[in-house]
Image 1 (cartoon, rainbow, N blue to C red):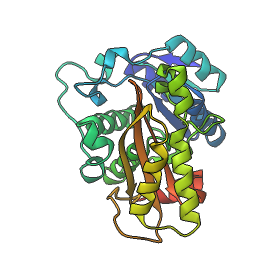
Image 2 (image 1 turned 135 degrees about the horizontal axis):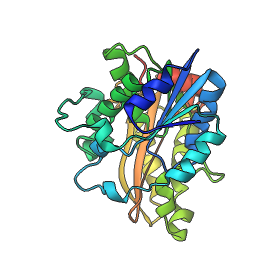
Image 3 (image 1 turned 180 degrees about the vertical axis):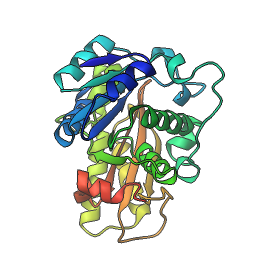
Length: 294
């Protein structure tokens, strides 16, 4: 595996790659969810570029950029074991050099949900992903379902700016009790960790109700809320039933797919999760055909 720290080193290494190239962008602190993206990229492509960059532009005023976990040595070992060809780990000044003043904003799909709770977050995401696309020139880029709104924003940006990149959406990887893997999980206390699987139980209950014929988003929201309320340690931030393409909130029954998403805070960690309804769509094919489709 080649380690590139500068754009010049990256471009020199990239020029030697042949065939299809997959990109796995990360902020490090890798877990099995990230490595699933690497394994899928390895299976699909002739070569892989994986990146580790803790992007300051996507952190808000009340979010501690400096506290984000950094485990570079272990992450690079995991990349090497996963068959990554080039690991790109730039310094902040390499991505945002002195005088940098150009940003990207994907307007409508970035407004609600996390965009409302974290103003400016998706501007930072869109800007850095566009730069990584330009830097690495991939054929396919891999993103996880767990950050569903991010997927929608990136797919919209990719289509709008005519990037020749396919976006692969890989289903959320979960613990045996349903908790979605996240770098934030390491900050849960034992009691909070025991309570956190209520998030998936709530989503699964909504999926079961939808399969039984309940297609009213208001009823499904109430069901999710009632199940979350059974765990007193969690503070619900929001519960959403939205159109999976536009992310507009739904208020009337529909036979079209819905995106159920929510965030719950357990102490400091703020955990987010989602599922497409019907639940049968939560596969790579179903996600690619439905979530953020352009």
